[in-house]
Length: 176
Image: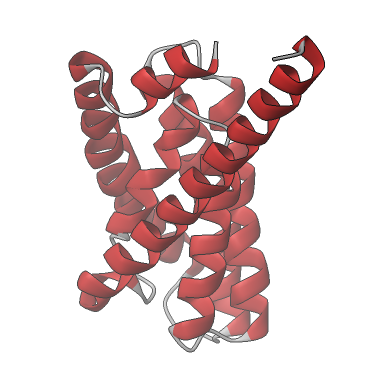
C-alpha cells in the first residue's frame, strides 16, 4: 500500500475514533444526568455526570463529548436558554483546562471544572432562575457538589482508569 494512502487511512481511523469517543462520552453524560436526576438539577446539586469532565486527561475527544452531553442534558432537562448556554460554557471551560493539565496528577485536572462551575453556575441559578437563596450559599452549594462529583468521584475514576491501563491507554497505543 502506498505511504500516502496508508497515512490517509490512519487519519481517517483517528478521526472516526475521536468521533466515537466523543459520542460515547456525550451519551454517558446524559445517561448519568438522568439516572441521578433528583440530585443533578437545582441550587444544591451533585451532578454525578460531571465526573466525566476528568476524561480530557485521557483523550481530547472528551472535550466535545462532555460539552455536548451537558448541552443535551440541560436542554432535555428543561433548562432555560441562559442555563443551557452558560452551564454548558462552564463545562467546556473546565474540560479544556483539564486537557491542558493532562500530564499532571488527575487531581490537578479536577481543579478547572470545579472552579469554572463554581464561578459561573451560581450566577445562572441566582439570576436566570431567580433563586431566593443568598448568593454565597449558592456558591457554596455548587462548590460542594463539584468537589463531590469531580474532586472525589471524577478523580477516583481517573486514577482507576490510569491504574488499570484500560480504554484510553490502549487507544493511545494504537494511535501512535
